Each structure stands twice: as C-alpha cells, then as structure tokens.
View (spheres, rainbow, N blue to C red):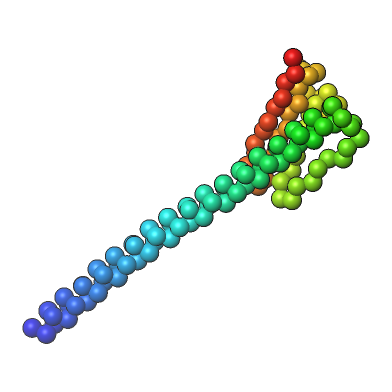
Length: 113
C-alpha cells in the first residue's frame, strides 16, 4: 500500500516537472523572439537614418558644394549614386542612397525631371 502512494507521488512530481520545463521553454522562446525583434527595429532605424544622411549629402553636393566629404555614421554604412558621384544606371538625374545596418538595408531615391 505504501508503494502505491510513493508511485503516485513520483508521478505527480514528474508531471509537474514536465509542465514547468515546458513553460520555461515556451517563455524562453518568446523572450528570444522579442529580443530579436527589438534588435531588428534598432537596425532598421539605423539604416533609415543612414539612407537619409546619404541622400541629404548627395543633394548638398549636387546643389551647393561638390567637395563635401561623405558623412560617417557609426554602426551603419552608406552607398550612394548620383550625377555628381558614382553614376546610377539608366538615369542621369537620379540620386539613390542605401543605408545598411547589420543585415537590414533601407533606401531613398530622388528623381529630378
């Protein structure tokens, strides 16, 4: 009779342990996804600001001062093409700026007609 009570206790402990482990795994997965999403938002913002800075830089070079040095943005890179600098394929009156941060890229483009 004592063996049956012991078996019930062991089974109860095992079931509760399984539930706790499952809950912990699910919570960990949700937290990991939230952290990944937050990092993606930060990189997206950095890429947008880099693309905007590149577009503004090319517009300034086009209309005011062609000798202005390229802006530097920590953690992000800027690629541009314009009639002033690197030529864009197909259009002579187009400025394209691509900002990149991590694995995220964002672009702005200005076309003059």
